[in-house]
Image (cartoon, rainbow, N blue to C red; front, side):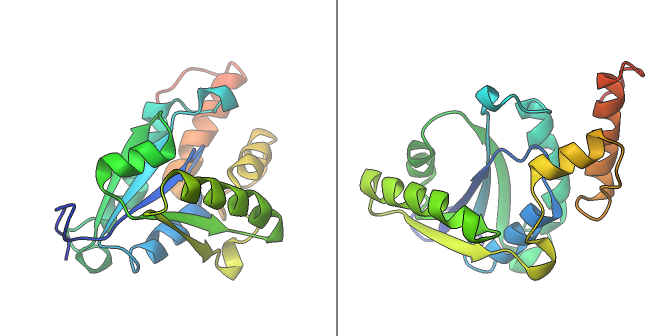
Length: 184
């Protein structure tokens, strides 16, 4: 079941910028492992968005957060991987042999954008399905953008991210304020 053979396992891709990864993302990841045999969390380089963390830092943070979800006793033996990508999502999915794109929906406002993206992706490759997972009630309002804004202004972000991510954010905000340069 956790095989990485492209022909025998259902491979899903959960793409995002993950700047930073939040408890909402982790919730979708955990639930996606119930749907696919292998889940690849695809961290978009997206330098044009001006991310707070560079691609390598984001990949490392996501890897830390999903370390317990890998085939070593995590979610039902499902393989969970983290990879950066900087090409068309559909090309990335094709290179993996993925047949499912996993997307999370928080609110009705997400739906229009996600609906358009799913339709475009279906036109690019109708063999790859988009599966939407509704955010859990406790996670519906969490977004990376709000977490960064709250954290940057000194608010408590500990109910939105794990302690590892909270510490990385605190360090980055201290760097921005010129309070010392500590590695993430």
